[in-house]
Amino acid sequence: MLDIDYLFDEIKKGIHTCRDRGIVPSTIGIDTWAVDFVLLDEQDQLLTPAVAYRDTRTDGVMDEVTQKIIKEKIYSYTGIQFQPFNTIYQLAALKKSQPDVLEKAQSFLMIPDYFHYLLTGKKVNEYTNATSTQLMNAFTKEWDPVLLEGIGVRADLFEEIVSPGTRIGGLRQELVNEFGFDIDVVVPSHT
Image (cartoon, rainbow, N blue to C red; front, side, top):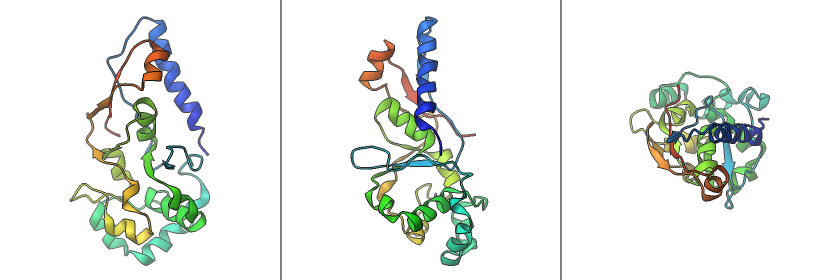
């Protein structure tokens, strides 16, 4: 499990440190590792704790998925290396073990997307991080409906894909009040 609340508190501590030093950043963007995600319900609450890609829940799942969707098709659509922890296999594992969670889910956000949501209240999926999921079509640059259908996950969970450098907005009002200033949130490229 990931302590997502701790990580967000550390982001806020960094902003508080800026304030305490008399620095007012004009922009902020969060980049983390790839493949991990959260699912939110209709009240935008986490449905499960965030799980790190090193979790064993995906053991054997890549083989199960590639029996339904041939490897050549997955690779030809995405161009992404086969790793047992890729998001496609994490979602397939969740669908198998906790299908009710995916039924209740209303939003899929990668970890940096979730932090951007906590900062702004706006949900988007950043393009370069989304490519790590092995669910994005390299040609259309959209979530691939064939792959999503193949693992039994609804396409409407996913947000608009935005390019690195996209300004998604200022801070939520309660954060502006907490910090004493606003900051433009701009999604960075995932490296």
